[in-house]
Length: 247
Ligand SMILES: NC(=O)c1ccc[n+]([C@@H]2O[C@H](COP(=O)([O-])OP(=O)(O)OC[C@H]3O[C@@H](n4cnc5c(N)ncnc54)[C@H](OP(=O)(O)O)[C@@H]3O)[C@@H](O)[C@H]2O)c1
Image (cartoon, rainbow, N blue to C red; front, top):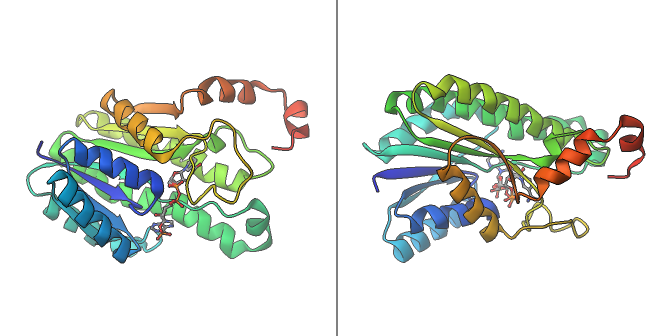
């Protein structure tokens, strides 16, 4: 397989499991994130286990000015192979914390949306030029309807979804597939401090399902799929009832 997966936010538990899936299918990897020590260990482990090329790369979503140089380096490191993208970075501070501190709120918007739009924007022409490839980005069920407990996080994911819809339309002529996964709760660092959440998936189950779904094409998809009926009900609840729920 002459394909490379660029994993953005590669220290995330979900991204780590997705990178293992890609490596097991013979893809080369560019592991991009902020914790270089972790990425170096991960790259060495994947290279030994799966006999694929795996390279760590420094990436900070909020350093917008660095994105053009970063993408150029990714293109060069992927060589003549097809470049695919798995976008997994994100933060989810408490709604109360974001309400109390505008810097926390702005930081979440910058990382989850502005940073994602910036790096995808720079990647767009690269993907168009190669006339193919796949982009998978992690949205959230939280983006379907603003809940009182985390509507700012939800808003960043709703914005990401809309961005990806237009991005998919623009790149469709070049044969690039763009998939937004509306993720339900996954058992990772992001959720460990929260009370036990319903239908919690393990990173490994989630990544395997994401890999299979990405193979079927772009669009948007709930994972685990149980969230499709659940969110259909949540979205249809009349506002007075929804507003009384403590979710
Ligand atoms: N876990 C869930 O229940 C759940 C549900 C729905 C959607 N999601 C989404 O799934 C994605 C992966 O989350 P996860 O659950 O695997 O959480 P996680 O383990 O906390 O991973 C988040 C990743 O984002 C990276 N990151 C944060 N801010 C960044 C920045 N400014 N620049 C570069 N990287 C940054 C982190 O890097 P550092 O290690 O350097 O901090 C970390 O690698 C996120 O987009 C999240 O919103 C998760």
